Image (cartoon, rainbow, N blue to C red; front, side):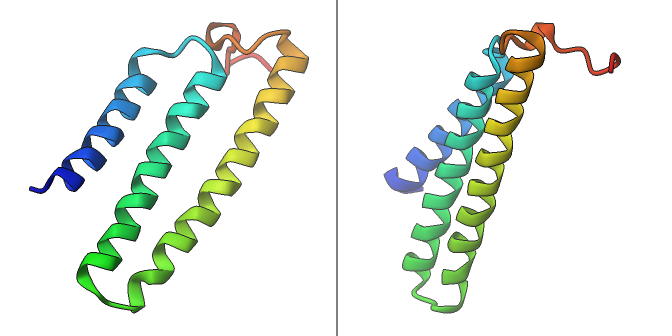
Length: 98
């Protein structure tokens, strides 16, 4: 395993650990999700360069598109929850109440 692969795995693992253990604010959870998507995007981009195939070059662009949609949806949820609940603390959200 090269140092490049190790850095991608470490970035994804640290992001997922941050998502699992540091869930006090919604914005921090969204940032952890974005860093996971960014590490996966860079890994997919490097994979298509290392294998030297032109066909998988579309996969990173597709993933970047989904990541932008996910970020927009997350920010819309952040604004909506802050307006209704007054803060972005995750312990204030109860999915059983409407």
